[in-house]
Length: 374
Image 1 (cartoon, one colour):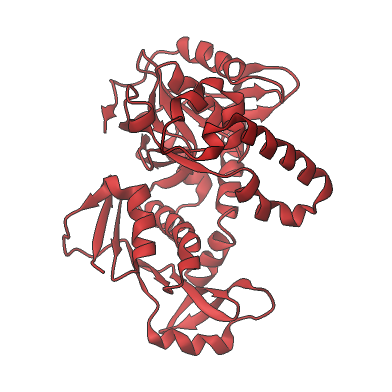
Image 2 (cartoon, one colour; image 1 turned 180 degrees about the vertical axis):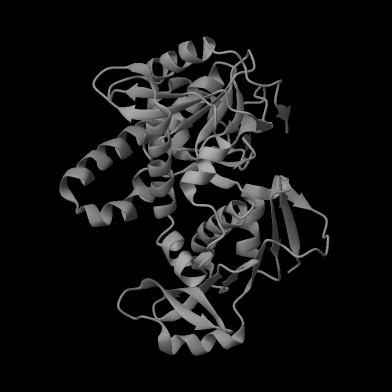
């Protein structure tokens, strides 16, 4: 085990200190492009193993549910404690630096990465930025579009369609927003079975000797699609999240391998914002600034809520009256960027979804010079 450091666009400095191989691997796989030589400086986010003193928290760990989060006092600080079957599993200290203390249990890997995402977001907010749930792409004329919408709003369908048309990539799901610019976060897309069904060219592009059978076998994809249809009608909603990894598995794909002609950008100043909105008719209409901001805040709140009650509980554990709220951060970073409501029908193909965005963006003049490639 070695210490590793990551520098995220000079905005957030992360250190992994003596973590297990599983925890290090998941961070390097997703954020390895930010890896730097050890600097010795104080990090913004410090990730380390749970100390032996954490064993005393077992008596204060809730046993009502297999997984639970609460606030406790640890080492003189009020922290967030995640438990697993009555045992301390992860501690998140939202102080300065933000600390994540995690057990060596292999099953804690996903929980650890979610906590790391929130820690990065929290550290970025202290410098006037944030980790934004959005897609970002640049058209061949140099105009950059940010696309926002809650989970399952078809952002990835739209991203893949635009990449297929030769657009440059900045983000599919998450990006760092700071000083009015969008910055690269992860450069891997997560492809699921329903993306393969909606985009016929995608299965051919991803097909290869190392591709999972779900990608290579169309009969298997059709069978899983039928199973999912049956499951949604016969199985409790509470069990649906447990079934999704089996019925609709996720396949992270490296863009440089499967879309070698796509340029991956390191940063860009957005020229327009598009909010995906369910509707009965396709279309693209301007959004008034106040309405746009309200929708952006709601989408980001949904994203943060998907990490668990981290945001509200971190405010309780470490109140910081000087930190800017989410509305202020979004308003400061996106001032002057025009917003549009991109109406999406349930039956629309990926090409039909992309057309209104392409036409609207073509009517705008680029706000800045060409962004920097990664």
